[in-house]
Amino acid sequence: MKHQGLKWLTGLAIGLASLTSGAVDASAQAVINKIKERGYVTCGASQGVPGLSRPDEKGYYRGFDSDICRTFAVALLGDKDKIRYVPLNAGQRFPALQTGEIDVLSRTSTITYSRDTVVRFVWINLYDTDGMLVRKADNITEPKLLDGKTVCLQGGGSLTEKAIEETE
Image (tube, rainbow, N blue to C red; front, side, top):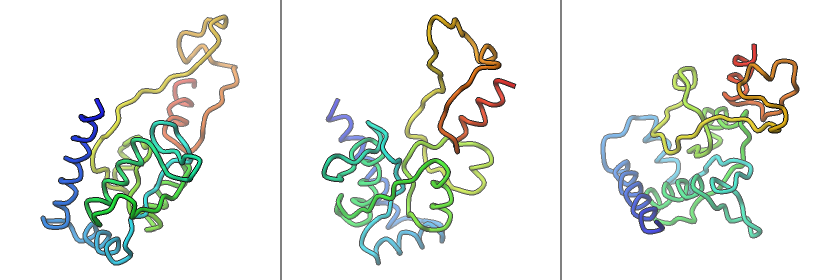
C-alpha cells in the first residue's frame, strides 16, 4: 500500500514537472515564475485535519493534502521542504487563493458551479460524502426528522448550505 502511494505521488510529481516545460496558460505560468523566484511554494492547508493536513508536535505538516503540497515543491523546486503552509479555515481558503496570498490550495473543498467560475480546480483527489451523527435512541433516519432540533456544523462550506436546504 505504501509503495502504491509513492508511485502515485511520483506520477503526480512528473505530471507537475511537465508544467515547467509544456504549454501553460499565462496566469498559471505567472504563479510558477513567482514560486521559482521566491524559492518556496505557499500552500493553503486546513487548520488540522488528521490524515489530510495537520502539523505534528514539531510543526511539520503531515497527511494527504500536505503530501500534495510537497509534490508541487518537488516538481517546481526539486525539494519537498521548500514549502510554507498557510493554515486556513473554510471561509478563508478561496479568497487567499484569489488574492495570491497562497500559490496552491490543497484542502477539503467541494467543487460547485459557482466556485468553478472563480477558481480552477485541477483534479479531484478525494471523494467523500456528507453525514450526521445522531443518538441511536432519537431514531432519526433522514434529515427532515431534524426539524426543530439543534444541529452544529462548521460554517463557511457547501455542507452548511446543503444542510439548510435539506431541513427546510
